[in-house]
Length: 324
Image (cartoon, rainbow, N blue to C red):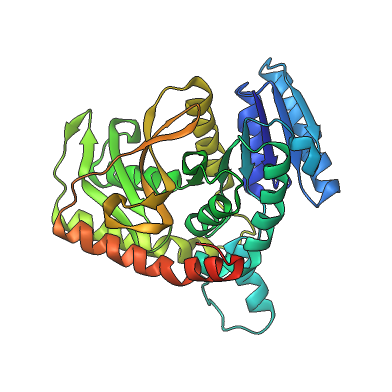
């Protein structure tokens, strides 16, 4: 199993590479980044960390041609929302101004275009996991730019929203997070849809009080603002790295688990022509099935808000690429 991580010198890419290496999920791991000095530092550290866990694999730095014959390519390179906000503030923007992930599309589309060419040339059958934001929109760009237009191979990472949802439920009702299940779909951002009817505790349906639902929805909207207010200079790298490793293991083991991820839609949930977070059955070839859940009226309206929030950025991508 060969896995390539693009953006291996970043917070997310380095965390993903570390998790993949120390869990022994690849026989060969290639890390690439334009910041060669930082990449080499992480590369050496990751090699040694794999030895601690007694995992024997080939880890090397590389570039476009080195991803040849990759089974999985993770695209984590690009400008982060934190970096964008800090740059704006340094240029005189109002204190506390918050950028949404959708505002990163112009910066990060070029990265997708560059690596899409390499994927088409060197590993056209790879499963491609896009992490760079806005993840839904850039996942759709990766799909549009692919030589095969095989939508099952193009996955946008959105597991963090569901993990935070489950953790929030656990805290609210006073149980361990490992006992809680539930899904968040739609936009990776303020307009994500928390599916309260999917909440399970110890495998059993659990009806949340209305005030808890409202509090969880508000905390979802406040998450990015709070994270940026910390001015820590990093994103949710550890969480995303762990989540990516989970997705990689599902793919490599072909376990066909249901997991939330961004997928290019062709009529599911009544939408088409863009990508957003939905429950999918994940396996060796990527997305084997998109699960269409029965949504209540509130959830349908919230999902429409998600779609509305993605429209402008998706149009920018299709107009810029001249593709639909």
